[in-house]
Image (cartoon, rainbow over all chains, first blue to last red; front, top):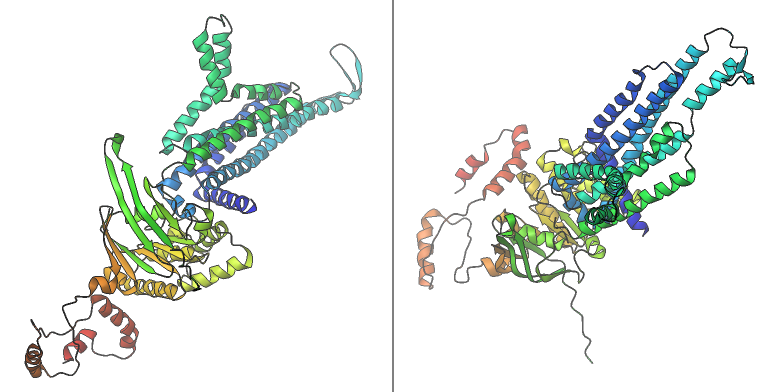
Length: 301
Length: 306
C-alpha cells in the first residue's frame, strides 16, 4: 500500500515538473493573471459596484481558467505519454496502470493548486488595491469625524470615517469568498476527473479536449434543461424525463455550483451546504477516476 | 533414495503466443505474433532476430505486460508478466528512447529508481555507479532534450539496470551508438552474463548478436523459423578450417595438394580478413598513438603483411 502511494506521488511529481517545464500551462496561467488584473480597468462609481465588478471578474476568471487548465492539462499530459511512448518505459517498471493514472490525476490537482495559489494571490492583491483606492477616495471628504447617521435616521456610535472603513473592509476582506474559492476548486477538480475519464479511452488530444468541454457544458446546462422540459407537463414528457434521468446520473449538475455567484453577490451560504456540495463533487471525482482506471487497465497500448 | 534436483524456473516461458491487431475499421487483421513457443533459461543471453515487422517488439511488449495476448501464455520466472513481482525482475531498454525529455539524466534515473522502489542514499549511490558505467558523467545534469542518440541509449541502459534486474529485455541496444559505444554495450552484455543475468535482445547487428548470444531465434511474420545455439546454427559440419601463419606463398599449392591427398575436397586457400568493425576499432584505438608518434596507417601496415 505504501509502495503504491509512493509510486503515485512519484508520477504526480513528474507530472507537475513536466507542466512547469513545458510552459503550456504557464502561458495559460499568465493569461489568467492578466484577466484577473484587468478587473482594475473597470471603474465603477459606487463602492458596492466597484467591489462587485472586481469580485465578479476575479472569481469568474479563476473558474474559467481553472476549467481550462484542467481540460487542457489532462488532455495534453496523457496524450503526450502515448505520442512519445514514454508510457511504455514507465509501465515496464513495477507500476500498475491505475497507479499511473491516479498519479497523473494527483499531479493535475497539484498543478491546479499551484495555479489557484497564483490566481488567488493576484485576486487578493486586486481586492486590496481596490480597498486602498476606495478608502483614499471615501475618506478625503469633510465631516468624517461626525457620527454616522443611517438612512432611517438612527445615529450610530461610529464616526463616518469608521463606518466607511468598516464597510470597505467588509467588502474587500469578505470571509465568504473562501467558500466560493473552495467550490471553484472542487468544480475544477471535478472537470479534471471528467477529462481523465474521456482521456482514458481517447486517441487524440483534440478529442479529449472537445468532448470534455462539451460534457462540461451539458453538465452546466442540465439543471436549466430540467427546469425547462419538466417544469410543465412532467407526467406526459416521459422520454425527456428518461433522458434527463440518465444525464443526471452520468454527469454532475454543475449548475449547483452557481451558488458561488450568490456568495460573490454578498448572500450568506451555510458551510454545511458548501460541504455537502463539495462531497457531491468528490463522489463524482471518485467514480470518474475509478471508471477511468478500469477502462485504462484494459486498454491496448 | 536419489535426491531430485528441481530444475530452475525458466526466466521466460512462452507457449502458443499469438497476437492479432485489428486494422482500419476492423476489416483486416494483422497477425503480429503467430503461435510462438520460446523458452529462455536463467543466465542465458538470447538473441531475437528478424526483419522489421517480424514480431520481435510485440513479443517484448507482451513480455512486459504492455500488451495482452490473444492466445497462449507467457510466464516470467513462473509469474504473470504484468505482475509487480515479475516487473521487479525485469529491466527494459526500448527500441527508441521513450523518456521524459524535460528531465535531466540524473532526474530521470531518480524518477525510475523511485518507481522501482529505491530511494535515499542507496539510490544516489546506484545512480553514481550507473552513470559511471555508461560513461555519462558529462551529461547527468543536462536535460535529455539536449542528448545525442548515443547518450539517450546510454541513459536508457542505465535506467534498465537501475534496480539490478534478473532479466534484461534490450530492444536494439546499439541503435544509434557509434562502433566504440556499440562495443562497450556488447562488453556490458557479456559482463551481465557473467553476473548470471538473463538477457534477451533484439538487434540488426548480426555480428554482435553472434558474439554475445548463447542461443538465437530468427523470426519472420510473427513465426519462429529457427532456434538454437550459435554453434548449432552456424557450424558447417562438412567443412574444416585450418588457419596457418608463416606459410610461404609458394607453398600454398603444395599444402592444397597435400590436403586433397588426405581426402579433402574443394580445398581453398585464402587469406582471412578483418571485419570492418575490427578495422574501425583498431584504427580508433590506435588513433591517439598515431597522433603522438607518426606511423604508417593501418591499411599500409596490412599491405606489408605477407
